[in-house]
Amino acid sequence: MTASAAGDRNQGAQEAGYEPDPHRWRALWVTLVAGFMGLLDVSIVAVALPSVQRGLDASPAQVQWVVSGYALAFALALVTAGRLGDALDRRRIFLLALSGFVVFSAACGAAPSVTLLVVARLAQGLAAGFMAPQNSALIQQMFRGAERGRAFGFFGATVGISSAVGPLAGGLILALAAGDQGWRWIFYVNVPIGILAVLLGRRLLPRTRRSGRQHVDLPGVVLLGLGVLALMYPLVQAGSGGFGGLWWLFLAGAALLYGFARWQRRLVERDTQPLLDPRLFTTVRGYAVGAGVGTLYFIGFSGVWLVFALFYQNGLGFSPLRSGLVVTPFALGSACAAAVAGRLVDRLGRILTVGGLTAVMAGLGGTALLLRFAPLDVAPWAAAPMLFLGGVGSGCVISPNITMTLRDVPVHMAGAAGGALQTGQRLGAAVGTAALPGLFYLVLGSGDDYRGALATALGAALLGMLASLALATSDWRRDRRSRQRHGECPEDVANSPIHARQN
Image 1: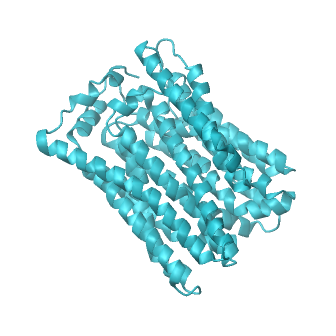
Image 2: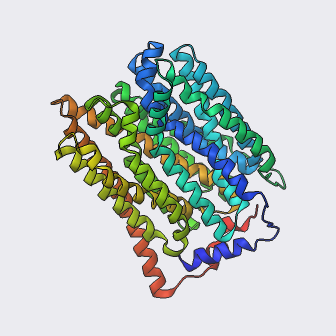
Image 3: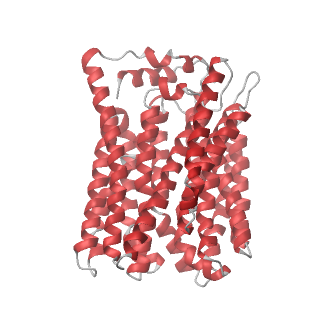
């Protein structure tokens, strides 16, 4: 832990007007349960796509949008939703979004056609995107000091575990709800849990106190939304063969995001509230590096689960439940490590992320070798210890990185900062879920070699994680050299312009 970070958190614990909310820990669990549902629905539906296709007589391209449409709408909403929570009331935005998520989950389950299912999934993803940044912002609002680190540890564990357990949860629901219509319960299960979370949230969540007129940057909303859409749309179309003709959208997206960045800097120069303050990346310790580490990691992390599902279900003939069970050791390792890592991040700092990334790469690399060369009747089970190791590493990456990225963000920017962080993760996930299965099918098409296709896709995932490891290692070494040479001044960050404004 750097001296600057410690100084900032100690100062935060003594902020004028801050009084600990007596309901803060129970309120945290309400937001984590809701956030878990929203993130779980990114991956849980993937194992049900064959059932959805049969039940609704849909084409592969149509059914792919059940997954891709949700991810696209989710990512589009994040930064705007975070800024609205900052400017208005995070509690109100959270409860409205959670209520919408419940309603649209029920609509997904009851959809009579694939068209209506895709529409409902788009609305469900939009609601989840409005809900997600309020989670991290409410942590910033409710907690200070060491408690904030612990709360972010739980939040990071929720993010990591929700992605890893999706295949198992989906397989279990399909096993219990047999038949071509059993997939509907993947959506219906959200309804009672969501209703309970809404009722508890109305009672426990604190309101956001606002003074003065709040400004929402509408031009920034348009520029950022169009930029993210232009980058993500070709990726979500990749699974249906629409990637090649849409390459020009990447250039358009880059230009729009450049225009967005210029516009945000211009608003700061005018002393007007931007949608996403660029000083987050230049003056808030750890934010820019943490966002980069998270984005690169999710490129490899997110696509792995689709590749495993394709290998086990299509290659080895496993049922969705059995396919989920064989990758469960990763989720168990992640859950165990995340609970511990949240307590160690203050003491160890970035080296915890470096060690976690190394363990993930070792675990997935070992899994790839076993599934490529070991006898098929024992390989899936022999790979369990390596998957557990990878899960332990992942628990030391996602949770600590979120904590280090967001813990020094000023409260009045917490929603936008959390939304931007998750937007990067969603963009990384979109790249991974498009590139890794595409590479899997490319190798498979040249020789029907499922084991070779899996090894190649996992190798590509490791490249994304290697880039994340290089960035994390560079940040750790730079921080260590700085402290060894001349120490740190705790006031540097606290006195920066972005921290001058209080919530």
